[in-house]
Amino acid sequence: MHAQMISPPSMTYDDAASNFRIEDEIARLSGDLDNLNGCVECVDRYVGQNRLALRAVSAAGHITEYTFEDLQRLSARMANVMAGWGIGAGDVVAGLLPRTIELVATILGAWRLGAVYQPLFCAFGPSAIEHRFNTSGAKLVVTNMANRAKLAQIANCPQVATVIDAGEVLPQGDIDLRAQLAAASPEFAPVMRRGDDLLMMMSTSGTTGLPKGVPVPLRAMLAFGAYMRNAIGLREDDVFWNIADPGWAYGLYYAITGPLQLGIATTLYEGGFTADSTYDLIERLGVTSLAGSPTAFRLLIAAGPQAATRIKGKLRCVSSAGEPLNPEVIRWFDEYLSVPIFDHYGQTETGMTVNNHHGLTHHVRAGSAGFAMPGYRVAILDEHGKELGPNQPGILAIDIAKSPLLFFTGYHQKDTPAIAGGYYRTGDTVEFEPDGSVSFVGRSDDIITSSGYRIGPFDVESALVEHPAVNEAAVIGVPDPERTELVKAFVILSPGYSGSDELAQDLRQHVKTRMAAHAYPRLIDFVAELPKTPSGKIQRFLLRKAEIEKQQAEG
Image (spheres, helix red, strand yellow):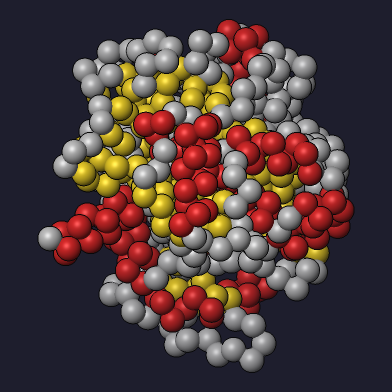
């Protein structure tokens, strides 16, 4: 079994895009699209090379290291346990666990068996979990005692395997996971599948409605590997940490699957996110490549420049995904951490598709999501499905015929209105810059129409967070009989600032100066928090709904 070759960072974007061949990506696999296993691609192919695979950090800060040999034995034990409970190829196994070794065992054990893994975020309540079970038809869920009570409230809950610590009592009828793992054989021949067979059953984040099931086939690993090489720019000497939770796509795709595919060790931290714990681990582990969301990075900024001094200059690169990256974050990371932070764009359905690539050389413009990743062709469509040119806002779409890395073919057990006329429509409004890069404007239903102007909330939010008083902002349009909509901003202030009419006026003037007179927020609310999905995406539709309901109540 051959190791993957990681593209040198000296390769230009233009060369990588023009020379892309799907056959080359398939050749990077240990198997092929007729004979494929997720655990083999992420573990077995690197056994015998004495490689570190995982740094697992407990909530208390204890570090345990695992080799690929360790993960091979662990995945085999888990596959034996699952098979003993009747789980077979194609069955769905769900994981409701924090970032622990048992989570990794569940994912890899399911794949070794040829089963399908479904992630469940630990902050989910019973209704969110039940909705996902109804989508997937999961036959087994692996959890711990901290999350077990949620499952007791779910009708027709699948078989439960539970991780119990000393002093905890196993619920009646549950599988004692650790006991059965210890007793299981460390050998289990991987069940080979085909590229179109399922690897994961994901769900959308629910920014605009109930989550939809997203089947992810094994061939999606082609796209995951390409992202790690080209956009993350992962190197063999990197210490990599993606702080995103594997309960969501960015964490599962690119904190677990992607780095292991390339034979590079990944890092999992069981504890919750704080600026101090993040800086601590970067310093202790010598992290060189960091990935996460703008929400997390803004919390680092909120901790202040002094907290950042101990790791200044130690990171090689930072990758950001989940929400558009405000230019102010880019400036702050450059000044106080001496590291480039690049914006990356993707969806659960598509993987990452538009990126500023650390692994490829090209011009990077602050505020741009970057260029289509080699293997994807993106277009911007008007309401009639016609492709648009530079500086013409429209819906970002993926040209299916010219995007061999695209793995999405439709939602689980649903019609696929997002796919029509040869394009997958993302629902995000963007525009091309003259150099071919893509700039984010907003979700199609987030665009504000005021006095005949179309205003993208992202631009207004970016202008607001450039002000030292603003830590985070969300901008929406609220109905207005004269202007159609008024621009309204919800602002979380930086430490040391308090809301006032004077500050609100200062922020309005600040946006006028940075943008245009028609785009400033006429209405500003100072708030303590913003509604977000568990993965950190701002739910502007909830802010709009609340404003409309308030207007109706006031008559």
